[in-house]
Length: 263
Image 1 (tube, rainbow, N blue to C red):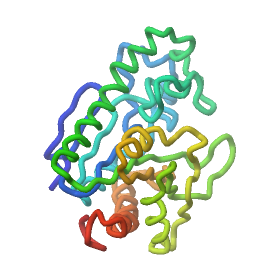
Image 2: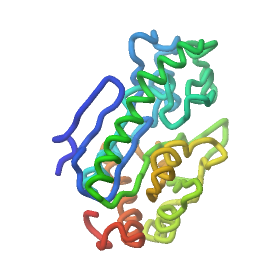
Image 3: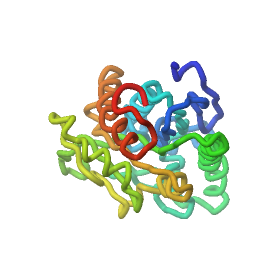
């Protein structure tokens, strides 16, 4: 099934391939750098609005290709994480950051409680509700489900070069991560690491906890260095590499009985 053939959209979130039958639900919380007009660009310079601070370049392309390969529903945010980071709880300062690495975000300075609540209601809650609706539907249909979130990261952070190319991240539930890392030798040309370049201590596993652990679903977060995702061909290639690790991991967890091909 082509993911593009089954999509519903709102201002804040899109659900692609909602009826996908594969054993995975994909999330892409940082899919877009779009800043709704009501926020007046957050006072950012044009180049900063399209930088890695505003979104995860290439992540949506990887997630879409995985949706196709796995016949998986995909829930993607349509709003920049600088407006609201859907991988952060409302009480976290980083949900609406005043600064991201070297980039100042003037439109996030001194937000009132009402301003924060408006963003929570119009960006975060619709995303969470969309994820919940997909997962509730799969629970009713008793569909085996693992939650997989897809992200990208910058090769250099605060002046430090990152050697890792693919990060396999987890919180207290390491089932999928362990099974994927057990198969990392399938990608001998890649540096694949556990909980790199981020981990639970960095506050990046909110979605895994809220939508995965709280529902007792196996879950994992995939981070890909964004210099490997420069174009659609690169994104499709990395999706296939992730697929090589993920499908046998799902089989090892009893979510599918196939070791190769579509899950």
